[in-house]
Image 1 (cartoon, rainbow, N blue to C red):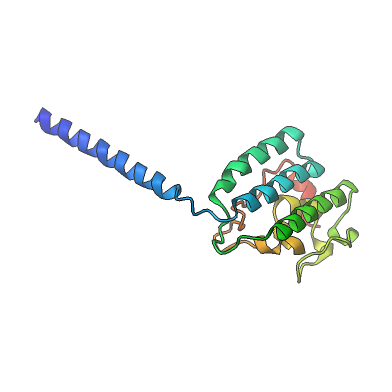
Image 2 (image 1 turned 180 degrees about the vertical axis):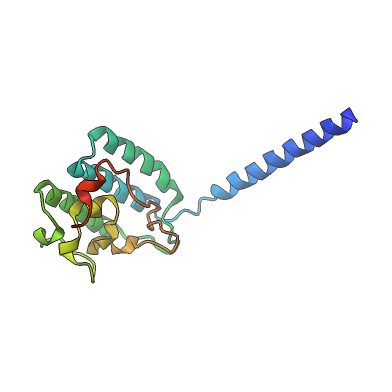
Length: 169
């Protein structure tokens, strides 16, 4: 009876190890798309979040977190943006941070930053864009959220140090 229990325990342990190694192997296929794009965009968001009350330490943590998180690539497998698109998006994010630093009450006070079609600049704050919805920037429209609620860069929203400060009016 005792021998059967040991054999059963060993079989269960092997099954667990086997299933875990299968899961790890499938997660590390090297098929990730847009890893560098994701890392650059998320780094721009993390750096820019300091304009919205996020400390330098939190910004550095954010960058480290998304550097690793982006190793999975973009969630839209067919979406591997060009270098020009990535640069335009990160520049728009940094410009939005500049707008936030001026104390803009809404994106209407930042007319040089193009928003995606249908976005009302009077109802969205720069910090809301940086922290939660960078895809509303025209240059970043390619990171439009997918059906599962994550953006195509793989991130839902950044850590929020001051949620009241960036809510839409």
